[in-house]
Amino acid sequence: MMSIKSDFPIFTIHSDLVYLDSASTTHKPNFVIEQTNQYISSSYANIGRGSYPLAMQSEDIYDASKSAAAKLINSTAEQIIYTHSSTYAYNMLAYSLVESSILTR
Image 1 (spheres, one colour):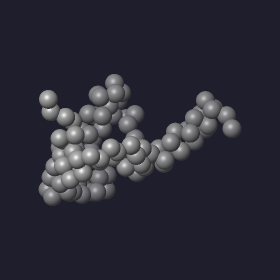
Image 2 (cartoon, one colour):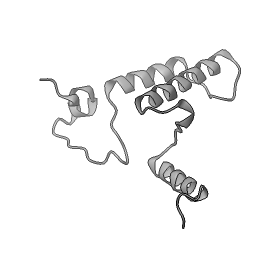
Image 3 (cartoon, one colour):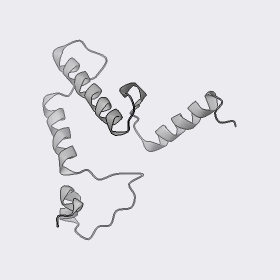
Image 4 (spheres, one colour):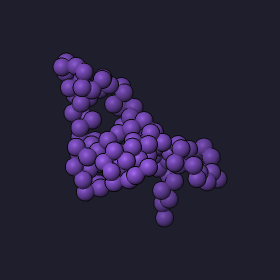
């Protein structure tokens, strides 16, 4: 039986690793590493700032990723917000709940 660990290169290097800090940093499977490398190598450009073909291609990829994430959690792409960290995301959520009066201080 093949283990899910075989998808993660970190476990090839550190076969006895037990990693429990995924709230802070999550190791990436080969598929994510390969797709990130492909994107950076062939399509990397700022989204929402340019009208040149590479920027438009990057924006299409970004939008497709939000659609895929939305489908995964039975949501809409417009409801997906990417943030740079989980702490920032939690703070944004808490602030939104307070501002909408769902939560009070």
